[in-house]
Length: 268
Image 1 (cartoon, rainbow, N blue to C red):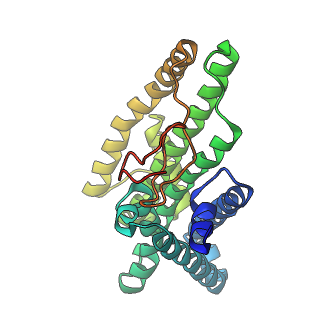
Image 2 (image 1 turned 180 degrees about the vertical axis):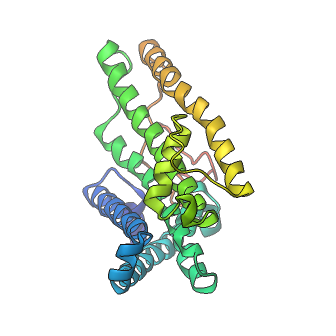
Image 3 (image 1 turned 135 degrees about the vertical axis):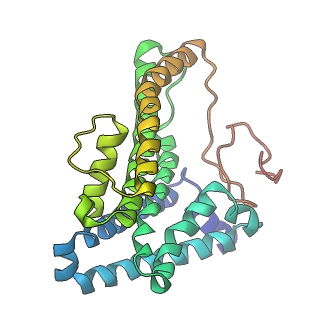
């Protein structure tokens, strides 16, 4: 195995000790970088630890930029990976920092890198999915994983929307920091609506209306998701997904018995 193939196995595969270790370290770095962005938006912390936040942000941006470049280098078709979902997420994770140098304030969109936490599902696959014929216990365990996926998407949504509201609205409206804006997003998307923080601009009200409508769908999703999963488990029709990533385009999600990539046709 060449050095390039070895690196590909580490950063794209999750079925080896080195690959799992890389994914876990990467996930912790993503979480830490998100906390830095959130903390920087708190006025008191920003004034006190301005230089520390700046250094940490450029350290994380440098790490993620190097990782993105290496990912493009190890795949045979860089453009295919760059235009894939995770390829676009990886790029969006580093762009806001550089854009923030030109357009002040937009650096807060660095929080969009929370979408990179979706890579944690590759690590979950290492634990193995429960076989479909194990009855109610296996169905509940499988539903728990789906609930984690669902909650992760919801957290990503409220984090991004909260950050947008922080950029759109001013502190007098109550959106004085990203954590407070995320609090507003959670209250809105769950249809609780305390009313202690409310948008005053037209664009902010449009976003709030969108989140209110989405909130009704969010309430209904978990029940149907658990029910469908229980039926699929009992019928024994849930396919086993491999952690194998295509050496050519870097995309994953293939069946265990797949011989070719379903995206580009390259032999796995």
